[in-house]
Image 1 (tube, rainbow, N blue to C red):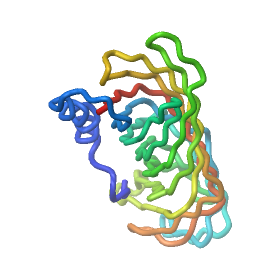
Image 2: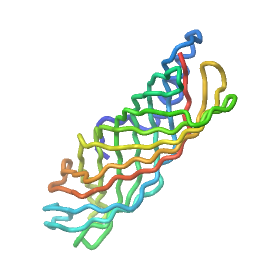
Image 3: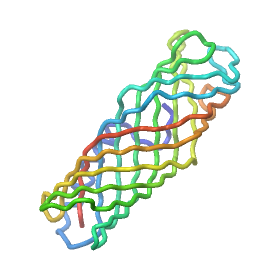
Image 4: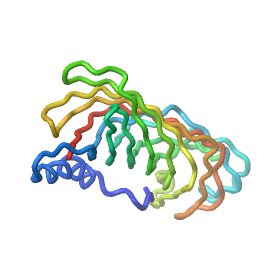
Length: 232
């Protein structure tokens, strides 16, 4: 894949679990500021692209439909936010997801294995729906800036091990969230979370070993995960 900003998965996983641990060296304070990390699974519905003047297997393909089937993938995120006395929260949250994919390319007569990945930064807001002892249920919504969405195609037909990459950025995404949170201590809490993200009419351009454009892409991932939060 060619998504330039995300770190390798093992580095991401280490960051997710050890960044909050570093914060624990400080004494617990009654502060409204917090940091948190999330990890989970990412599920994508089947997608379609409209290909314009794309070169695959030395064939010039114009205005063809590409069908993309995605496997269950990986999701991670890092965020920092502020909790108001009313229980409302605002948050800046970065999320990365990756899903292996199989792409049926118009007129090519074969399928291509590959990967579909994204990096998005969200501004989120949360409302405390239920508060019961140490439990909280929150609903949220956010607006995001797509730093990159990337699809890679691996050439397994010719045996040349050529990877073709199409990428897009600077689009807008929206997100809704449902969170069930349990307070472990004054500073630490854990939560189960569900996220639905949507971005319409995404356009991708050929970059690595690829030419042409893919358009009409609707990106609608659903993620289920757990998060760890540290309140300063």
